[in-house]
Image 1 (cartoon, rainbow, N blue to C red):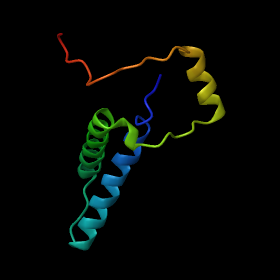
Image 2 (image 1 turned 90 degrees about the vertical axis):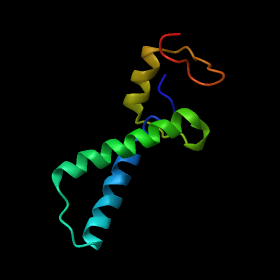
Image 3 (image 1 turned 180 degrees about the horizontal axis):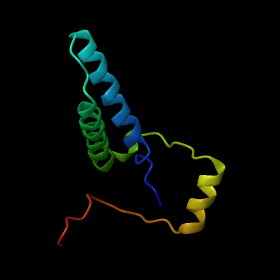
Image 4 (image 1 turned 120 degrees about the vertical axis):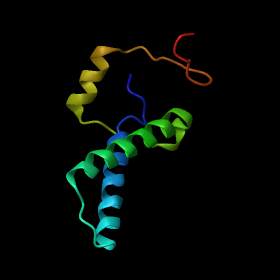
Length: 90
């Protein structure tokens, strides 16, 4: 089952790209193509961390009917996690 914050990773990445583009134009600097990927990855990582630490902050995004039917066919069980995520190697 996909967490509710997972689709917000794309939104966070695009938001960082947009803010960085506006800041570079405001300072009259050139926005390079390399900065696009750096900003998108930075925004995605930040939203991922926030999603793991505070998953209730993000509202649920409704998927189109074809995606929701596909995700229901894969796994219909609900996993319940209480507490912080497990550390790797334990």
